[in-house]
Image 1 (cartoon, rainbow, N blue to C red):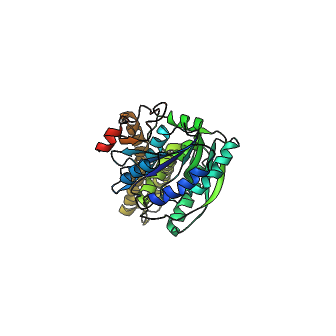
Image 2: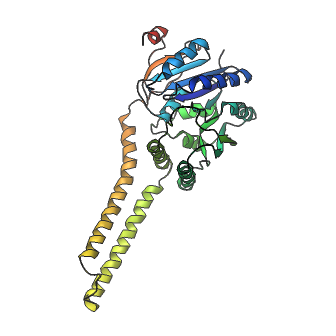
Image 3: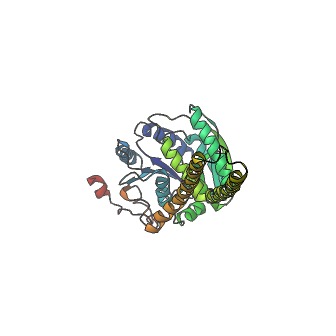
Length: 336
């Protein structure tokens, strides 16, 4: 039977959390008002996550999984799950149990009322350091001010989306994907569900500061042209300052020849300032040009090494041209 609900779970080195995740997801699946499938996406894990996913599929055929040939990143793992799901309502949640599966029935109830996107909005973060909370608070508010679309505050990828929203997302060809931003850009009828974000159940934090910063830059660059304008404004400001300094230097030369501000120190400061402005502007341009470079290469967004659990579908998943997949083969799965 074709599933009504599909749960997408990106997985990266989560062997410590998968048993508890399955236990809690099973309880949620049993209380849903329609058939459910769970699509786990192994993002190149180095531990026993993939082996556990195979075992879960053997025990419960509602569990489907994809395995990347290497680590392609969280947003690409979510994208792969969106490409393969078959349900009419699609839920995205993390494997670390910071997104509580028990909230899914509440999301589904809003979907049955006619909402197309129901996103979970964090009102409290348990056991997260002050630096993490501060940077997250500043980033979401900065992004909302700079972005061309209204991206809700304090929201991650934990959400439920209607089938037509997912189909539209799958039709979008871009590779540097910021799912929560694309979700807002699409529009449709959306509503927030507040929740308290739990602490990680087990294991190490996968979104390090470096990865979080990269995701933040992706969000800013993907949905705002303001950084480009900032470089223009800073350049104009430097030009005005240069004109003012030129006028002052001429004035001091004729009317105050012993002024301490007319010397090598002033020239050095001006050179360093203008050099910093140029490097800053080049850096901003580089971020945008780098994304253009990634797009024009037209490489697949991800490469699959193993796929299992979709063989019984009436039709194979509609995977877009910007991905590479292996054929659905139980024999191949066992030989890996």
